[in-house]
Image (cartoon, rainbow, N blue to C red):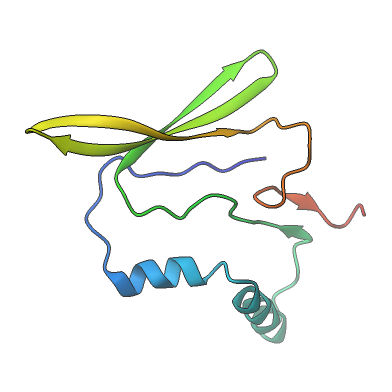
Length: 112
């Protein structure tokens, strides 16, 4: 299962907020958040969630392309040149890779 999010129009984000969004995925901090939740009595849901691409702090659009049983995401970033708006494709991400991806997927940890 993949969750795809990107804002086509948004206000610029302050540097401290960018750092916070990036830091939340650091392994050491993730373990700390997990321990804090357990200490507060929050039960473990038995699933993990990882970010394998991003976060990106630019305006853009994600396009989901499905062809038969294959799927990919094309990421475009907005740009203005010579007074005209452009959408530049910056990444293409395969969502149906046959090989397991290192991160960015839901794992059912209860069935393992």
